Length: 446
Image (cartoon, rainbow, N blue to C red; front, side, top):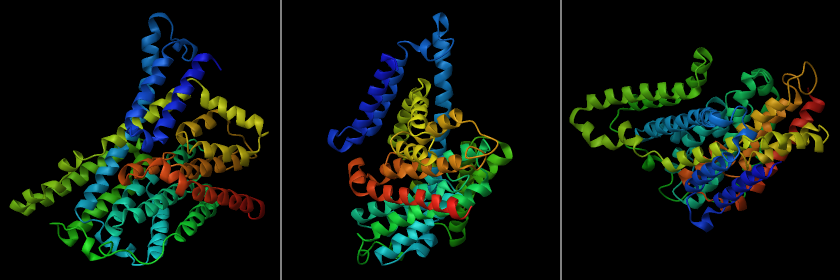
């Protein structure tokens, strides 16, 4: 590893520590992430030729720009997907689309609510994706739980359940989509063999967290008193719900039909929902002006740009680590050190995914370990299924370890330190329990 590579890694680690210690530094994590992104790539430009072939002489600028634009394009698809999903969910919520869903979930008992939230999040995440599911569930929680100290416990479980639910579904997480598209796993295989471990990884933390919740919710935290008031009729509210949530479910279908990136499907759904709600408001006549705050044009102005810029900074900084080969070197070192023990290698990759974005980690593993005809590295082999599970569920151990965690962190203002103190060990217990469940399953069932 060259001195320049070490310097870039040091800058990344220092930036990461500043993000982790946001509650002490009082500097917004988005600002730090942007500085980290710029600093890493600025150091990269000291000697780009050592990392990018063709980056010499007059070709340096064009070669580096091509690399950065490729990664920026990949990052932008995530950001547009995030913005579209956040807007769709907010529109559905603001227009009362989740009223009847809240009625199904609502419970006076704190523990009963926790279990309902856990299972609904788990299964919804398998249909949608973990990030979108986290947004939906936090929006519902805001109407059900008035006490913020209780709500952030539920929100933390939403992160765990969303990541667990996404791990057993081929469309539930970015990493499983990547593995599925490369034919390293099949839809039937990953659902059949990862369902039980994923359930275990959610149930164990849910049980531990339920022990800290006693009694009933405070007044105003549930029931019809918190239902969103809307100028729309009951039928229109349900139409908004089914177009919004049904549209999100349709996104992977749209992708499989058109082979376009998922963010295109999200923008399609947003466009349809925008058009339909505008038609509904137009029919309201003069009353439509009183509901301007709930219209999409106004909601777009309230998008949490801090979260968006944080994603931009983190993903582009990680992209720099990928280009300089640090992630690939880490994977090779793991494979050599643990003598090809797939449980240990993927288990550690899962822990790393709570620190570094799981997408480049999985991408690095896919490039480093070619698919074999038979054995553990074959299609639906132990390595690929464990990688899907560990990269997905492992991100729950730190709040910035997954897209769901970052979104919830921004929406509920959960600090990194609070999550690490209260949730990290709980999530880790579920993570290990799921790996044990998978081992038992592979040993005695399949």
